Image (cartoon, rainbow, N blue to C red; front, side):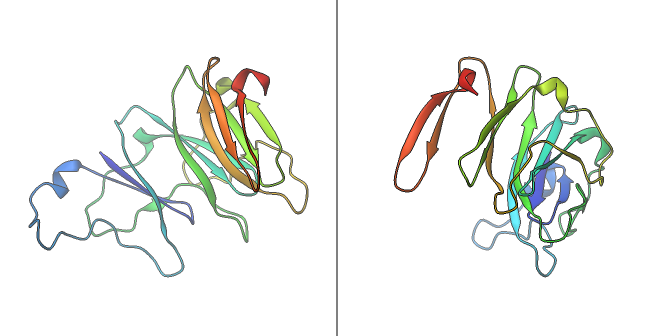
Length: 167
């Protein structure tokens, strides 16, 4: 499957075969994007995986890809996560069993959350808070980490590299 995500929380799953027979000189439309939305990312995924949405306001939603029915190329998708006003997607990850989640905020906070703390929920929900944010802070990035992982956090003007075990 080819799975598309938009910044406004839509998700679209399409069978890879829909994109196989095209003219290389002109290409084909892959997804219909609604006004005011943008493509956030694309992943190749199987039906038995879990998607983890993280929003800039610190909400998270874990959804199985089995819950998303495949649609044709020229569709815009369905609601993956319901966003609050002025919120948008910060990260979309394919969560696997051995990985935990590291979250970094724009004010430099970092937090690690155990994989088992993200319960599977229904697609289209609001999700649950995964990090407490100050009013002027938001999620800048999220990454899957294993015990021996390191994170390179690039800031302005300095950057640091820290072991995930330090979070």
